[in-house]
Image (spheres, rainbow, N blue to C red):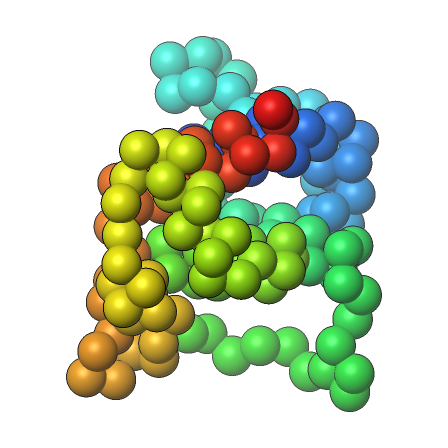
Length: 154
């Protein structure tokens, strides 16, 4: 799954209009025009397609967190680069932005027809290097985003 796919799926699941998506990028310090957003939302075979970088997708999610939860107290320093898998970071940021609990996530995965135990789920949120850390695969993230869309739009 590409970052562009993830951005499209999140935007669809949360029913975000273009202007609001641009604003989320801006909240994270990423200046983006509506045309640039459309290029990120385009499919690979479309001529105006532009690849969405890790920094852009993570910035978009940081903007979502800021919009929904506000800034974290005393958090003004830029974040150092992380050694985590990008899917784990995306999943964690969505969990924070949407204030999801384990039961909520398990319910969304069940909506998508994807059964997971609590143990498997918590392994995704551990720090890299922890003996029970598990990398979040594309299939897991894809099913979560599908469940999120089903949950949010129905």
